[in-house]
Length: 182
Image (cartoon, rainbow, N blue to C red; front, side):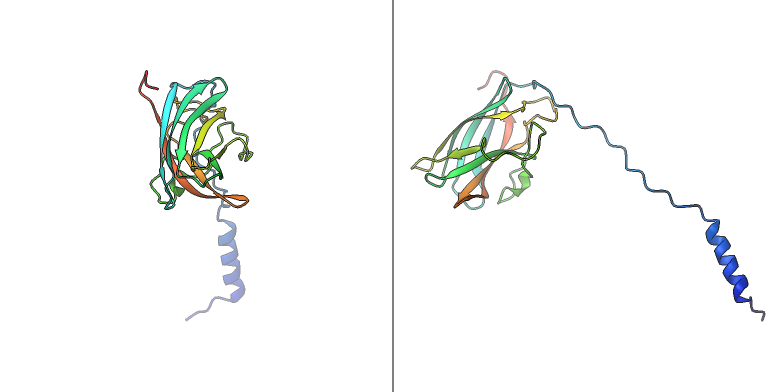
């Protein structure tokens, strides 16, 4: 049996490697551009019925109305910490199925500027644990599917703890109202 000299074997292997085409970097898959932000949606009103999450008693109803500059939230939320400062926010997904409302996803910023400032979405409960809501979600619209459309997303109430906001204690999906309904 004949043996191939080591030098010859090495040169054959090197030649094979040199003739292999270079690996090209993978190109990212084509994605559709994000939906544009618009000044007006296709609906004027919606509602979110908030149900308890994280083993709390928090619940309420928030009516949403399209107004100049955003969407106005109005309603009441009960079962909150007495005299507690809570947070009411729009979240990315219209899914409140998880017991802790984590299925609602992260905070959703309709303006596209980043995280909330922490002040405009605060609500304060009275001595009976009820908060009356009247606030604006700036830059938001209702309906139409634009990037700033909040219809089909969730409203989430964050609990009150000493010096910080706590767990998600209530969640409701924002549902468009039929034409003419409040």
